[in-house]
Length: 527
Image (cartoon, rainbow, N blue to C red; front, side, top):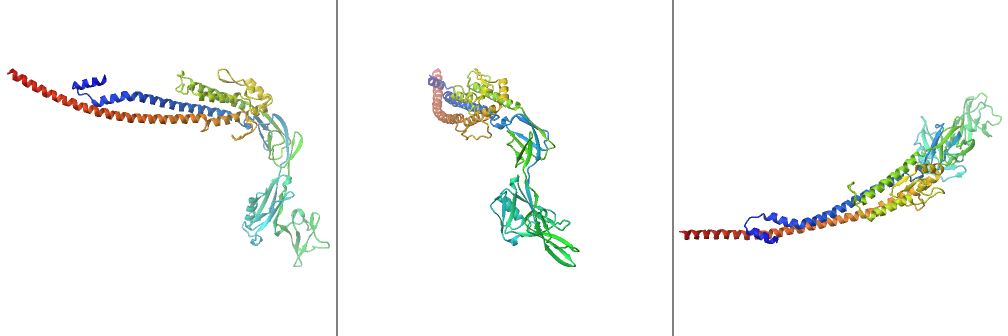
């Protein structure tokens, strides 16, 4: 027995190291228990690392799916244009290969109208009293615009703040200021703007050789007068409006007059600078008109941006380039196979090549994740076509070893003959889908959404990781409790051994005393 051995050793009076002996006894009890707890902690930490590897591979796979997620990812048409200075071209995923003749005859213009001149931007108008601006676009009067700051700058601010399709700019021409109004493009967007109450002013206008004023030189004028001096006397004659010209009244002679000037009484906004017009252009010889210079409804999937007139007809070529799409599909194959390889390593206890081999062996999570991801590849798309219904129809398949392969010849045929269906099968034919959108998504958006749910804090992977973290905390509490028990055991051993050491010391003293007595008696008997 160990106790007998200790006693015998003590009895021998050998002076053993009591502290070392106590520590050895404590370690004999503590070490196996501590090793078991440390092993549990190490396994839990390894599991957490394994879950991290799974999440990392899922993120890489999600990124690969996202490259096929939107219809815009299938914008394989590359447009070319022989007159890029005249118009620009943008092709979407629905555009089809082809050639077109484009001739821009007229770009769409917006009406521009100038105001009377003002001495400065803060010149007081209407004697400081607030007034309204009445805007009519086409034949439709809009809601009155209130001008509370009665200055040219206040008018500009009120018009722009109303956001009724007409903008205003205050221009400093050098000596005076003028307001320029700009409407929207298209003939139907011609507009007129008046003040209420109607603020009129006089402006000088030119006359022709007959001292007449053309309507175009005094648009919106309510009256036109001619002032001059005759024999030193200032005279004024009011002209009469006849058809498109302001004329002198009958029997009015201007013979011998001097200092002749014409003035028109006009509203605030009276001077047209540009008339609103529609865009006009030809596509393959057919004339087309649109109210905007951005045209996206003439050629399927193509947006034309008209800049200026072409010199004759320009050539537009729409050529399909599928290299980028094929690279993205190959990227999906690589991401899937990397994912599958990682899962095999994590679940293989016999794998000693990788440092994380087998750390999730026996975990049902691996099979659950693998099954969900495989279904993303093998299931029929929620937006199938007539011919292209699933990834298998473009050459993607999983072999008996779990490896994803691509039949490039089959993919080329699908892209050439059923490009639109390939795009719709993968992307659903839409862009920037929300994960909360309940409508059919297509294969790639559905996969992106499914992986997102798997990676959520409430998902299976994160839940397992949190459980492992919780277990580690419990194991560390057990380790703390073990250390506390062992400290108490060490203290108890030291107390017991101290008593034993005292007993041994007393025994040794008695032995030495008896020895001395016996030696003295022996000497006495000898004498």
